[in-house]
Length: 334
Image (cartoon, rainbow, N blue to C red; front, top):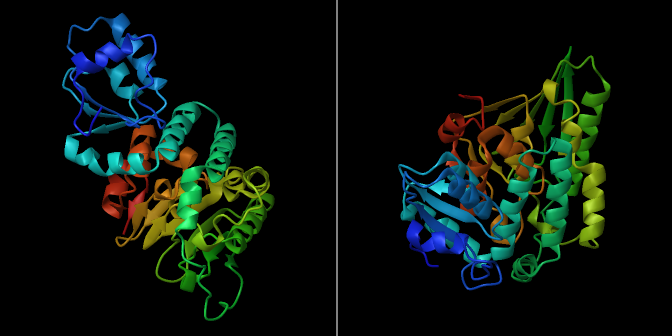
């Protein structure tokens, strides 16, 4: 396989081969890049066999859609693109982090029809697996020493302000671009505990102080967990997304500036999401040898679908507020 899409006549042979191990994270080519030039007269039984085969591949399946491609085959792919150029960034990222890329699409496939609670569990287990993997260790080894802030920002990491039956929840570490540190995570957890427990709060609105809503996980804290198993246990107990699910019918998000990683993963669960025109969204975790781990493998597919989520995660590309509105990632822009 290469960076050029493989035509149907060639990859069809793989479908009927007893074993295919030439494409995987452990092989020279860690993805399937296909042209879906499936003939219109392809029998339904073969269409179903192709779809099953695509869905069990241990690598991302990226495809250029053909005009006659059967719906079952289209839906079985992880990402659909219009042309080879659109796939370039994804293929490069997959080559650099093939284990993370495989794990990401496998989680998206496996959780598509699970409950949100079950899907969060699968995401956390997969994230823990990658925390102990070589790609994340490589990223950690190339990191500079953690930066030391010139001073501790005043006040709590999360500020609460109540007006009658409305609760304002504001992320309050603007100098750190509201990165999701342990301090921020615990502050959000406590705020969402209050919303969950107090039914007199009709609406809780989550926003961020400073230049952006959130730049995502605090990179200076990555790799500081004692071990992946303990990190999974902590996420099982303190993941804000899990608590948000219990009060999501009353929680809105107002976004601006950077919404990266956790900064988009958590808002995607919200009942209603408003973004300013300057907002942009990005899932960069694959570049760290990881997958979205703040709930994004669950929240984003339920808003924009599995294939668009895979596109964002594998390409690590930014999309602006206008595109997010078209996709349904946000509800209003202004």
